[in-house]
Amino acid sequence: MRFESDEMHRKTRESEEARWRKPADDLKRQDQSSAAAKKPRTWLSRVIQPALAVLLLSLAAEGQAGLSGPALVGALSIRQVDTTNATFDFIGMCKGTSESFSTTLPFTVSGATPASLEDFRLPGQGPLGCLSPQGGEELMVVTVVTPLFSNNGDRITAGQVVILYVVP
Image 1 (spheres, rainbow, N blue to C red):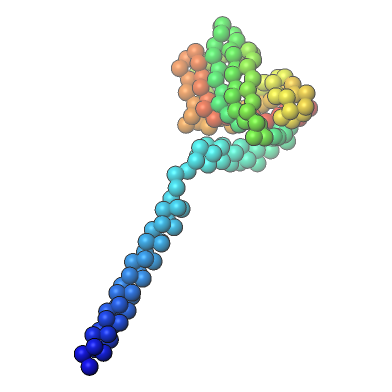
Image 2: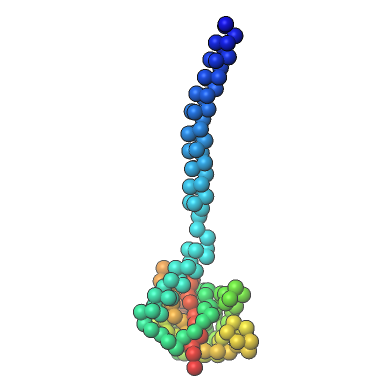
């Protein structure tokens, strides 16, 4: 009789332990799934997606029908070279391909703001293969992400800009 009661006691204890373990295992699974959901945001989601959202909102609000994609998204650096001209250096992406250009245009860096850069035209700077195989289209800066903008008087760094093609 003693053997049967020991066996019953063991089975009861195991089932109790199983009931206690199950909620703990469920909590571990929930923690793991919530940890996966709390991954740090990538550069793309932190910078590109907000920039594109701002672009779309600005286009909808302003109704700029004279612009077309694909968008060039990247960083723009502007350096004053003399009293009336500045060099624009762009490094970014178009349709998943790295693109860059450099051009000198009439522009005064001192006192320039993100708003003064928006609607600025970059003639003949469309990269090869982005919109057309030959490139050379006119571009326009449509969005400058303000928190990534700095102007020290003779040099502007715009860490994130969106540039579109001007439709003729």
